[in-house]
Length: 304
Length: 304
Image 1 (cartoon, each protein chain N blue to C red):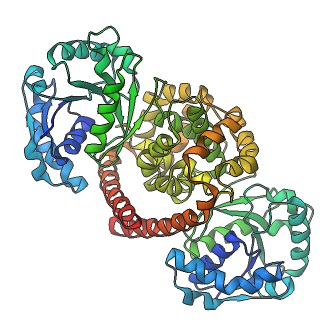
Image 2: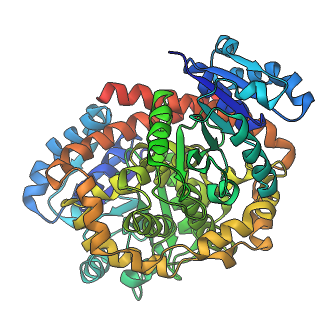
Image 3: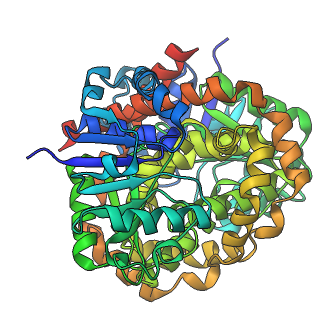
């Protein structure tokens, strides 16, 4: 049976979600509060596909509607990608909880707000969760699934199954935590990176090279835990026996929030392409991420 | 003119260096203090090439010698990959500083010891630096170049030029810091990862998925600074204005050295393949890293 998905809010993230769901064969119903955005959507979706190498013909399964009511009709999953403003999300979820079929799941792309903050107190708070993608989800597959204290376990099970069915990679969290998992990992790296740069120990380019020609490659194939499991003959326990004290000492001396200074920002900005180049570089990033994704799928298939 | 390189210490790292130098067309002179290791080297180097897809014929440029004196003869660069024991390195550098030609550079693969700790006080301490690779350097190109307070700037220039000439990616540091850059970044990620796992918020597999199907992919193409430069319309300064306070808050609440517990190690170990699988998985890792490296080079060439 073909699944029906509603995508609410059609900025960059919502459009990327539309591509994810449509290429997986779902019927996709799209809505954005801004009429001009709705009108532009068919062209914008085609452009998104062209950058990533997705087939624009898949977009024949995506349809734009004029009202929230029409859009949610028959949807088993609602992927909301509206602004990260708590009052906007509260109003929207209150409305959607009334409109959507009782069995429909309401999932937010929020990176900053936990579900309890905008769904607490709703009749259907048990069917609301955060399904946080990485920008943009059509070329990066991970999706963090974070329940509120109200979210029902069967809703989490269905969320995980749906994400696997559409070839995303769900990461199921057990409870709410500020920043979820991904941005907590990103935050500690940014703090230490900015500190090393501001101290003048390494340039922004050198910092990026260390990651993209070094650490990032192992982490792209395996993640940090599988990486250390192979970095000592006796596996992860052996690794932590040998190197745990050193790593603990390094993390104890690492930078924290005080590293996010405007001076560090200025040093990095000077070394980076300026804002005028951001749109073209973002397209290039998405194109390269799509190719990397295809390489990794092909490679994994050959290894298995 | 063909470069002559001496590789001192021929464990996994030394052998990978031999492949790096030989495939770049250098004459490679190899020595290990253990006679059995020296005898086994031709076979071990061929096996290394087979895993990574390097041409074993390149190894005709690699020759094993019986003494340190013979090995250093005519070498412009000495890549030392001995044990991470300060007394061993001190004795070795004292000896090499006497034997090696005055213009030769002595570079250590050390990940844990800074150059001043084993070269301080030598006549030639100005030509000693750390050239720290990521394991294994024939499939991961980054090399951290870290001077001691004695290391001469022209030695750093030559080190950087040599690494570029052999297609590695040098990251030049301006001064010594515990852990260099790469392991400082790794340490903060490991601390936060182990903490999230021990708190039960995410499984080891979920943590790894977050990185390898998410954050790691962007960082493999661009590094953390170029990543945030594209994550706000106005570039990195705009990003840090918008998200800096959130990232600072997340890093302030992140785990530190106390996260390296044996309980966390046990939880991760249970979720990972056991030590018996480490050799086969390490070969698979190297094979996949080699393929990833070829993909990235090909992709970069097409984009440029």
